[in-house]
Image 1 (cartoon, rainbow, N blue to C red):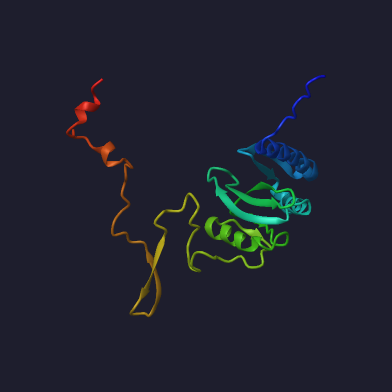
Image 2: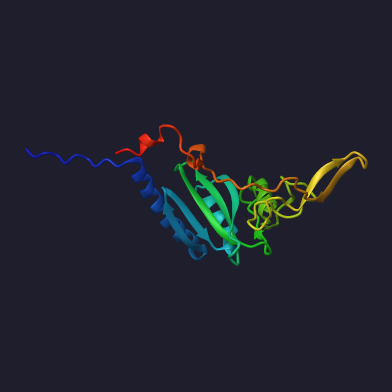
Length: 213
């Protein structure tokens, strides 16, 4: 009588990584030339696709399980020619898998809107436009949504001043909202982020005990 080899038990993390690697290979084969790269880190799969085939790539993913649109945002890299990464997070509820899809964009050439793929992308694209200045072609209503209509600039760009360009107040004399250049009564302060104990330079009673061996 021989001892049976005990079955190998895989952890949830190992199973997830295996599934994501298989998913990455499937997406690469399905997207073809639109697929640029994939990275698996921290048990999350990030796929980068060609911006010229942005909608084709998203449509393929939607038609292959990723029917749930979670989020769309942007990341700013001012030194790059295409300074933005437009990032979409998707969920395949049947397989319980999530992916991150990225493509490069600039602030001049519009990226095709994903509203016809997922209607929920509408507000998220408006937010990316408002905060970063990313343009989306064929968007049904690309207006600002978080800043005022007369706002100058895009707040989350790394080249946008913390103070902004103008400030808004209600003028009692003209009975309307007016825009004026920013006037700071107090400049930004510099903090050392040290606790009172770390920044103290004087000796307190009992400190000599801490130096004894």
